Image 1: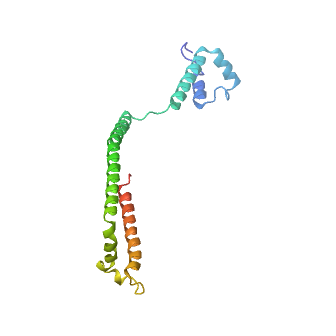
Image 2: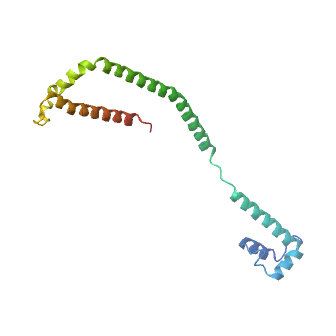
Length: 167
């Protein structure tokens, strides 16, 4: 036997690789490992390497640098888009408010003319064909036309809202 090798080194190596050290190790081999400097150093180094391997496996895996850079660029771009669209949203709200005020003013200004126009609207659109023959006076027809026009306006507003909604 040379001073750098031990005859039982192969046994000890197999025992360590299978994970049987120190629980399933025979008592005779344990006493040899404690007495032999080469085998005790082999156990010490192998256990240290196994512990280091377990620690490196437990460490979290980092994503590639390209993916991290891409996400950072995406966040930066989204922040820039949000910063730009904020004033546009304010301008849209202001334009809507002005349009509503102007529309309300026109309705108030033309209120006298609208009643005559609304009473003639069913005749202009030939809605008599849809209205039952029992209701022939223009005041009764007005009660049918106004809700129909209001429903059309409401549905139009809902369609515009749904089309311009953020996705």
